[in-house]
Length: 317
Image (tube, rainbow, N blue to C red; front, side, top):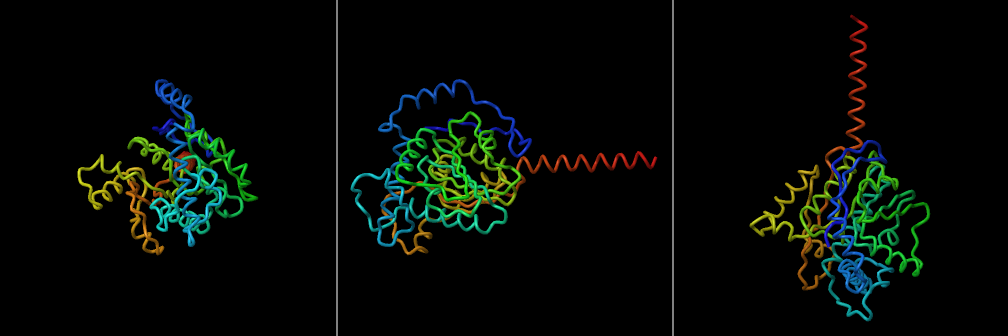
């Protein structure tokens, strides 16, 4: 299922407002109609999210797990076969968890975290957030609502002193929606993408645009990118070609990116990987540009100084 929302190129006028364009009516009808007739048993987004949750649950059952997800069992397959090796997805999850926690605790002023997910991400509940952290989840609305019911039944709660907000991926204007919920384009943020439905390069470019527009300079974007996106854009499947392609893609949106080798991550963690192929590339990217709000502030300040200079020059004459 492809993206259902749109991220606009309009500048942020204030930390909480934006001017955006609407998706085409044809797109709304096509996607809205498909989603309305899908049940959980045949909804590919729900099934994909459930599969990922099952992997986290199985990892949590190992004698020495990479992490402990006490809530993933809400959606795990009954009586799963526990593999002594770790799935690639779980190694990446551990990597993203550790980097997210490190950056939230060490990057000065970070109080905003945006999770781009499949709707069953349990990080808001299982991570110990610093006081006053604001956590946003952008994910498929149907999956999130069902998952929220299950989590409520399991006793999951956001730690006291923090705030959690869901923004439907299907929203016509995701950028406007997240700002209306309290996201500020003048404050640093950490963005994490894992599980978000990405079906085309345009989908991912929309994500890059959203993060680049809202994240202040020095903010971070962590996640994993489907490797087949690179394979469809470049002729060579070599790691060097992929890295160069990703550098160009991210830098074109203002990010300096580093790709991560999953095998090396597993080695550092002392884990053996399962044999299933994995088609995602972990990355860590730093925002080098100013956010739209920062640029708007700079523009206003420049105009103010310029106007004051003109007035002083006029008085001297």
